[in-house]
Length: 80
Image (cartoon, one colour):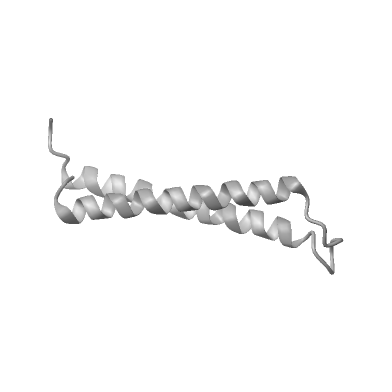
């Protein structure tokens, strides 16, 4: 198997970081949407959909962070 070049390693690292940033934005958007369902704007009864969207966004953020951490560890250990 071919060893990845430095450019390929950096590209992979950049993609992993972009995934974390995108997931962070999704969490922020979902949280803002959920927050609007509480006073003073909302009734204080969040919708199940808003809770599910936030849950999915949080899970994606966790997955993205774990993948990024794993990638960095592999790069630092010389395994990539």
